[in-house]
Length: 392
Image (tube, rainbow, N blue to C red; front, side):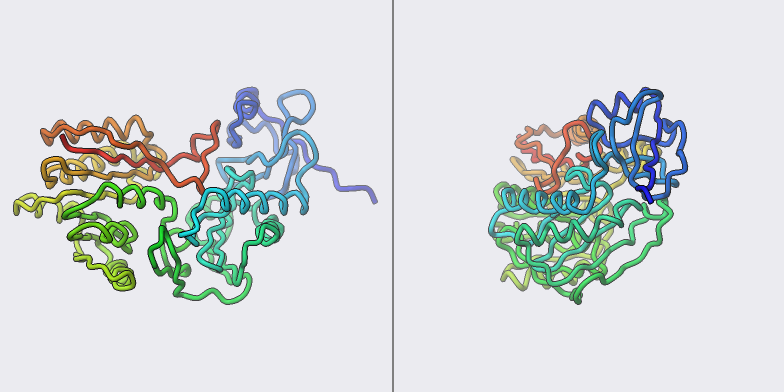
């Protein structure tokens, strides 16, 4: 019998232009016909006429119908996915410092492995399979990581993000290899921290802020306020230099983890369970002042419809933080909402400063750590904005 026919899916001219510009997504509105393609299968992509120009992973349910995985040549096989896994791990060996053993090893499209996330926590690996086609490449990618010398004692699949529902996939947590502990000690920037990959946010922790936490340690001294502190990865690292750190979060469990992280590093953090907006208003009303404030809120804009409310939220929280700063204070403020771009975030923060009657200098404009690489032609891969502002 001959080899199975690979479907050729034809797409509109605007999708061809986007693809040739380097963007790896083709939306369902630009798909002319599915040609009998199986959900999750690798297919060939062609314009309205002419030969194929790319290979992609097909989704029968998502608004993103095609995620490009190769050029016009052969569809990637086992050996090619394994090579990409190895290349991803070797890149991290170049950009992650020796004082850190927890980082992102595979960042989906940014590593030419669409829809797959792989994070490392010491010698344990957590994967997230976000699209149907990625389920078929997990094993060769993991083999590639080990080819690069990455020691892997266990593999946990945190396949519980809501986006899997849009892909027609079940939301579940699966042990793929070994036995992943509920309590893993890791090092970030030389700091001892603890992670539960079974229940923590994302795959266990927010790894994209690693270099921004290092920057915060450089800038933040004196009395520091950390708002939306979660498990204290900012607060604990800053506490090594600061004279006092106050952390605010609405989660009792997160604050218990924060206190454990602080104890493990021999530092003191005053943890307060409260709504961030309420606590900032109360601190301002009581005349409390800080030498530095850290803001790392959740994504206020999860889609375009959320943008107006998100902009109001970001303005309000930044305004409140600015009001509790001492003269020449430092504000480290972040947004992880892709739907709020850097220019818009700058505008929102500037509006907050104007309403607060305070003048700031931009000391640093930062983004996600380089183990979350940004593709030049793929703006969706750049989502984290971080500003270090100095009060004049």
